[in-house]
Amino acid sequence: MSINNLLNEIKDESLNELKLEFDSLLKTAKTDNVQYIQNAAHQLEEALVYLEEGKLSIEDVETLLRKQLIHAQIEANKSAIEVQARIQKTALRLLSLSLVFIKEIGKRIL
Amino acid sequence: MKNIVFICLFLGGCCISAFNPQSQINVMNLKDSHLAFISEFTEKENNIWELQKFETQKELVNMDFQKALEHSQTMCDKLRTKNIELLRDTFQEDENNIRKKDRLLTEIESKILSNSTSQAYESALAAECARNNKMEGMCK
Image (cartoon, rainbow over all chains, first blue to last red; front, top):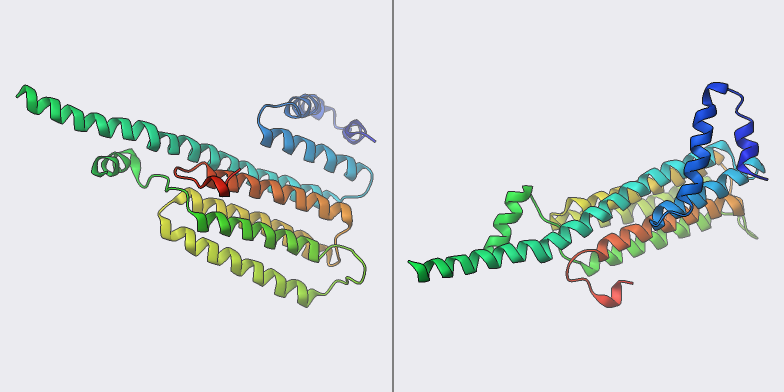
């Protein structure tokens, strides 16, 4: 069983380009460096194979996709937290210390 | 310290709060409750679909989310609260999915829900551990 069987069931020719894009994106995502993207692609592929085999319903795959969209927001928040934590730990501390030193240097010069 | 607070305010509101062991424990407990809920309503020997049991278990998990949200709201950290709200959204997706079926999940349906659930919680736990002053024993 393969996802191509599912895609072949879509007969609307206006969607041909989207089908090609989907196929290419799925292949790229499965080898992406970001673990979340890789996992999401593998889960989606697995779910689509089960859908093709009749072991999952359309509603099940829709639920999975909505959960993956929510998960994407958690991943985005995680990245924001990582960046802000680094800013707090390094940049803000550096700037604070700089202010202290500049004040001290200013006192000596004046 | 005064300077850090000033720069935080200058950057636009509350900064990311430091690692909080209780928050980490809350997310781990939510993960356990959520996965146990899926397992509870999966086909296995001597397990039958009971709507009343489903509603009761759903309320219990929702109460856990409520407690975790209330705790997160004491820490002036919007992203921490937002992540718990998002995890609650994934739970609502799962409980809606099961409720609509009006029957126990098959093994495959259960596996698909459980795997996506586990991974969302792993990201939320990693987000907790991305904070400063994390406790090594509580983070991978």
